[in-house]
Image 1 (cartoon, rainbow over the protein chains, first blue to last red):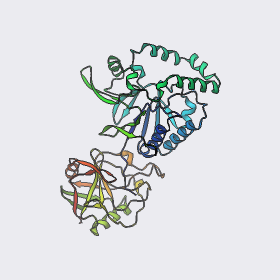
Image 2 (cartoon, rainbow over the protein chains, first blue to last red):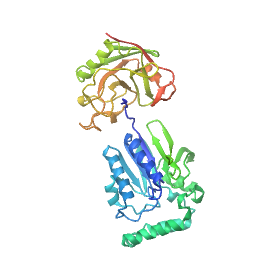
Image 3 (cartoon, rainbow over the protein chains, first blue to last red):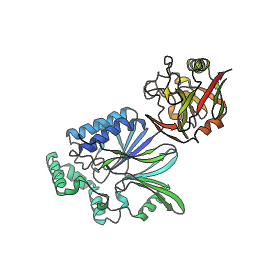
Image 4 (cartoon, rainbow over the protein chains, first blue to last red):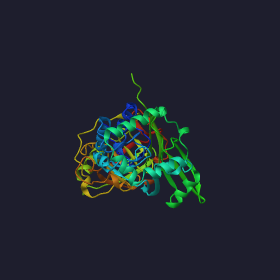
Length: 251
Length: 163
C-alpha cells in the first residue's frame, strides 16, 4: 500500500447529463466518485448533473444509486456543492440532503486557495438565446415550479419520456447546438463580483480562455461535458488542469 | 541533529524528541541503521511537499521495520520546513517514509481521532539547507509506474548522519 500524502485538491464538474439510458456515463461518474473525488476537500458540481429532473420524489433505482454514491463520498470527508443547471433546475433540498450535497446560489463567489472565483452553470451568460432566456425566467418562477411539482409522478415521467423521444439528438447534444456565451456578459459578471477567474459549464466547449477585464488579466475556465468521456477540472494550490477519462468500452 | 547529504546538497534537521518521542526515535533509528543511505525523494510537488525515505535508486521499495503509532495530536503543525511522516490510509501506518513541507499545509494537521481527521505527524524541522529542499522542486517530474510526480533526475540521499 502506498504512502500517499493527499494534496489539497478541489474538483469541478458539470454537464454529466446522467440518464437511465446512458449507463456508460453513470459508470464513469461512479468510478470518479470512488477513485478521484475522495482525495478532494471539495467537489463542485456546476449544473446539469442529470439530463432531466422531474422532482425529488423520483425513486427510480438509477437516481437512488447516484444519491448513495454521492453520500458515500461525502462520508469520506469531501464537501459536495451543487449549482443548478438548465436541465436539473428542479432538483431540490430533499434530494440534496439525501445525497449529502449543499445547494449554492446560481452564481456564487468562492475562495479557491486564497483567490476569489465566480462559479455558475453558464446558461445565464448566453444572453443571445432570447427564447431560452424567456423560458428560463418563466420556469424559475414559483408559480411555474409549483404547477409542475404538483403533477403526479407518472405524468411527470411521461412528459420527460416524451421530451426525450422528441429530441432525437438527445443521445449527443453537440456544442454547436448550444449557443456560446456573450463575451460582454462574461466581463459584466466578473466585474460585478470583482474577480478575475470564472468557472462555468453549459456550453460543452471545454477550454481555458485568457481575457481582459478592465485592463486586468482574467481567466474563464469552461468545463467539459460527459457525453463522450468523463471530464473534470482539478485545482491544487499551483496547478489547474482540465482532465479527461475515456469511457470503459463494453466487451 | 541529523544531516541528510543529498545529491543537491546538505539538509540539517532537528528532531523533536519532546513532542514526538516515538516518531523522532523511530527516524533516528533508521538513520543510525543506514536505512536512508541511497534512498531517493520519489514524490516532489512544488508548493506542497517533498517525500522520500522509502525507495532506493531505480524506485525499488525498501523493506521497513514495523509501523509506529501516530503522534499527530502533539500540537505541531505542518508548517513550511517541518518534517512529517508519510503513511497509508491507516493513521498508524508510518514506518520510514517522511516528507518535508514546502508550504504551510494546515489541512494535514490532526483534527480528530478518525481515519480522515488523524492527520500527519510532524516530528522535526529543517534548520539548515531549506534552499537545497527548494531546489528539488526545480527538477522536472513525471509518471513512473504507479507513481506520479517522480523527479526525472534522481535526488538521492547519499548518506544520513546522526550527530
